[in-house]
Length: 141
Image (cartoon, rainbow, N blue to C red; front, top):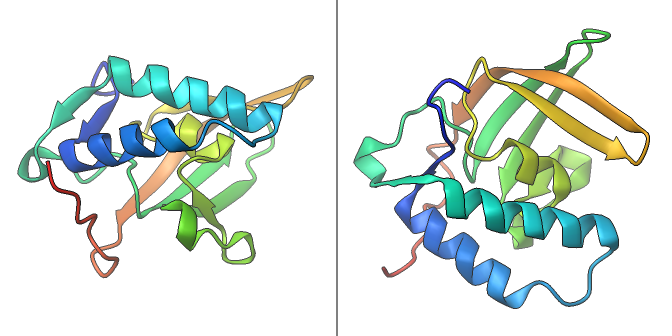
């Protein structure tokens, strides 16, 4: 891990905490485990102001390309707020297992992703792009 810890922007931290408070009720086991992982991740994260946020950190609205270290397949995706999720366009909600595993990491980091009980793969984060056209989270602090 390049920065030694997860890095999360302050407004996103507040937003994620609010999401976690209201979203733990009617999900599959995989989602419940992802939400628990996200809760622990933000507890361990370094929280920074917007102007201190490194551009290479995966966050809400980031476009990401990850490459499987076993077979070199590449997967592009974008992490979005829950209401913007569109799997046909590779837009995954921050509350989904895959984004939970990626949030807070940076370009060049290697991440273990679990796809099922018996299947875990290592991926390298090849690219992180910040979507400057996406709406910024308008969250009062």
